Image (cartoon, rainbow, N blue to C red; front, side):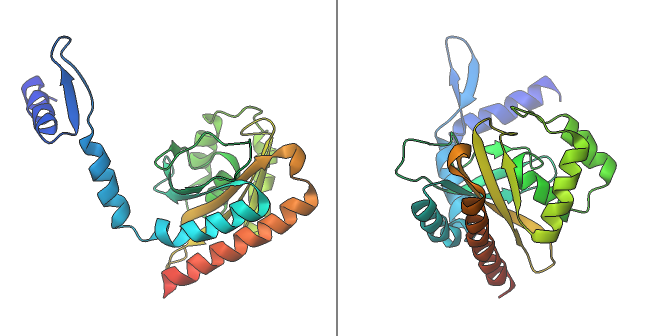
Length: 214
């Protein structure tokens, strides 16, 4: 980009409050105007408001952190709703946090229900950062399992000591648009808990899918 063009754009963003400039160093940083922009975007998106009470119920019942993420493309997903339990364990995530869509439990669902070529999926898988990376062949088996049962589990791979369970939400064209995810300490998430929790997530994800079809 031509320097003068870039400077003109930056000055407009400063005028609108989306950027701010330190006059002593001439360095730019994000401005508070982004908050109102983000708020407007959230208000025009009904999904977070619909998903929030479902996340709250699961968080309270199972004492896990729950979140809803919007799948933007194969490179980006963003958390749009979040519920934290009243327990010492808290997952370090906030509304607006962005992650690679192929990571963790949600990633297996994205790989299972997307139409992206296998070579593209494998390429992005190789670049993911895990605490304990799974082997690609093992991960592919998990993807196939996620496709058949419509929920996915990641235990100790993405975050050591943490188990995540996710279920997909689809639009009217059958495309996965969001995921519902629950996260808890692995030593408290035995097979019985995970099985029951996954049923609750899948039920709520199916309910959100039905609402998108209405």
